[in-house]
Image 1 (cartoon, helix red, strand yellow):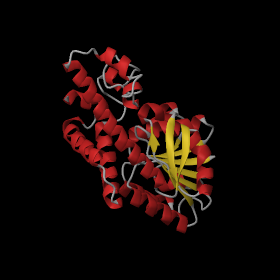
Image 2 (spheres, rainbow, N blue to C red):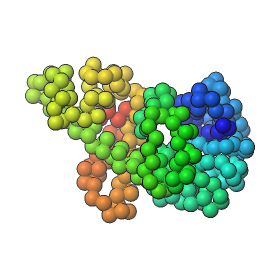
Image 3 (cartoon, rainbow, N blue to C red):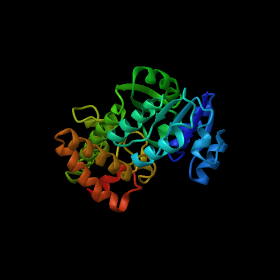
Image 4 (tube, helix red, strand yellow):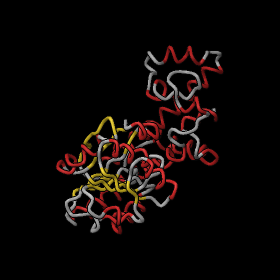
Length: 288
């Protein structure tokens, strides 16, 4: 299959490379020359513009920074440029309203399209073990599923257009809350004289167990190898977590949902990200 891939950053680069490994012809574009060069090394064919990459493509996948850019790229470079039979997949994390607006524009122009944000971070993008939360019609999902499966371990249909984004921001709001709680618990255990490994051994098999503890422990040398063991580098940046929390609060306000802990998590990450936007979000433990 000929797949145009737009946006080859930390996540998109690995995703495009996995599509090549899956036997697809990947037509890649990014504004960064370094990202374009890396894509070539991974077997992608590169183009001078997104519109050129979309010409003749059977599918278009995007991984872009925000909703405004997604809307701009799809309206200017994808819709009307990609063949009408192409399936469009946006894997960016953006606001629900823009996701639904862009999908509506695509559908009114005769395309099938899904929003398919991801969970898993850079390591999972490179390893092809991402989880995709997909919004769109049943037919669009069925067309998108094999493409997403080449880049991930799980592809889940979340319902109508925009529901992929809804699932992503709800999930990441919960992740931020339990990461903060996990960090507070480890910091408190230390101040009470309880060894971090001992606390982990107890809590990881008790009622306090959670993903932030057992799969992404914020304490170096405890549990699985995580960004904490690399001075909180790579992984999922605090600045990106803050972006997702802001999207979550925006969506909650629009829906009339009460998210007091989500709002508190946003406040905490706003303070942390001022000087640590590129630090892994588990590095919040440094502030405790």
